[in-house]
Length: 235
Image (cartoon, rainbow, N blue to C red; front, side, top):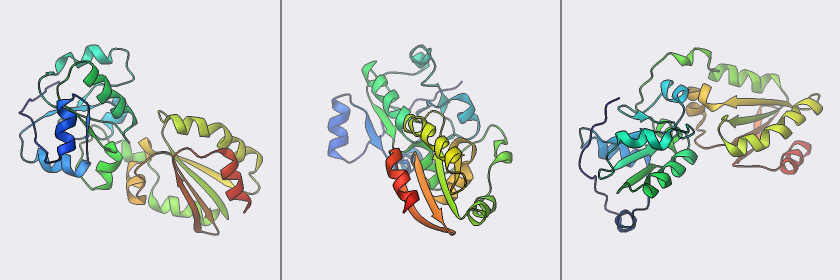
């Protein structure tokens, strides 16, 4: 594992400078991060997703330290606390927590890449893959076929690590089981369908999409209560 250190990257925002002085994490967009890194040879870049997620696609030169691993803090010893460190995950939830942890551990300047790999991919920025994991991904043609074959289709874009997704799964499974004569529930794991997610412009989690007679009639981002979903289905 190689970490290359460079000097601090400077940004014009007064708020960012104040935050940096206060040792609080600074949020930076994927596009701004990519633009700034073109001017530098290397940085401390930390991917806090699981090794499986990292292997299927990551930002070049990023080191992988899984935030959910009990050894997370110990593994951070490879980093220099006095140099800037940039953190990302898939959509921003884990990286925000990791950035707070880094700041609490005394890292001087911590940058959280807003929206993580989902925003990175949505901006068509380059990534490196360690395997050919795309073989089993759903294609856009298969996706459109599902829409055409089901008069009422409820699609749930989720990830196994996403807390709101976990809370919604039981009632979505129940709807799929008890209302199968009226609606088809299709759950799409974004970690296993990166190209499809990018093509559809899904850049946050969870996302629900409701199609009726091949037309999207409803789309919602974030946690959605069961009652709201049932209301949309019955309209």
